[in-house]
Image (cartoon, rainbow, N blue to C red):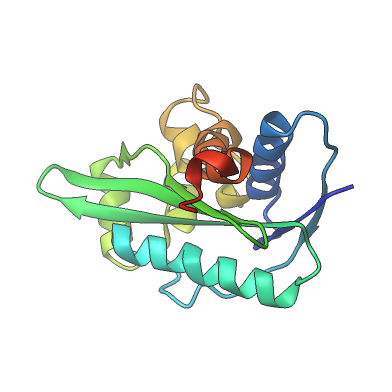
Length: 178
């Protein structure tokens, strides 16, 4: 049974990565090993590039700490601000011993009050808890679930990008240069 080392103990992130692998490799049943590893970036990444760097750092760390896995996956959520406001996003990275893939989720706008809380230094998940009167949002529906009134499931949000990230591992003949 193939094993996926996941750079988080967050059940939503783990389920998204596992489900994506199971969809792209339907004849396999996957086991997961979850471990918390540092991102090496801010607790709340404040740019697309910092968020991507956090995912890359987590992927490297999980590969080092769980070297016997068949695959590895990492997710880093962050925000990016531009002229149109503040947007949330996540980067997903996966690897096998020979191959690598990455993808970014869709971005979505944060309401002004929530964005201001993040600008003032509150991590997005904690700001959601405070603003929406929730608890441990980042281990459940997350900002996307709250803002969309449950129409967009956080696991599905991550899983879509995970599917895209896994494509080079599923289609090695298309993605390898040699």
